[in-house]
Length: 143
Image (cartoon, rainbow, N blue to C red; front, side, top):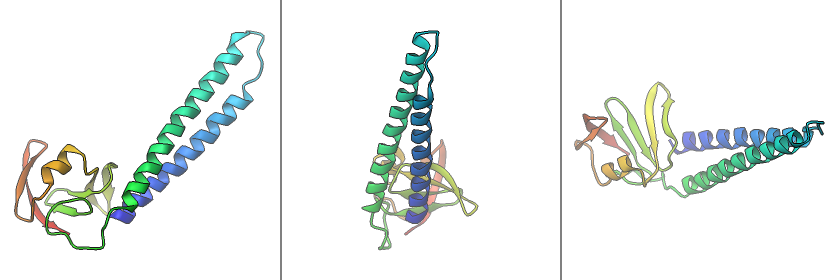
């Protein structure tokens, strides 16, 4: 799951990089207008858009860095950072917050270790249950 999460983050990084480049190009191509302030407003909007994407890019890079520090080389017996928690309807990977993703016909929630659901899962083991989306969910296995 770590490799899948890394792939998702790298896709976000590429998409955001393209958006930054497009916003910069749009700001650069905003031509002078006889309308006066229209030119300045267009350039300002382009720069604001670029700044927004730059913040997203920084967040993506931060998440990638955090994910690369997650140890998935061991088999976990309790839910913790780096663990894959399989339940009947869906599964959880505790490592980085990427939300709900469909991976190989399975619904997986990629959770930040600081997410409320990750904290709820902390120290649980196979056979334990917890309340998720107002439904009692049983942990089938952890690895």
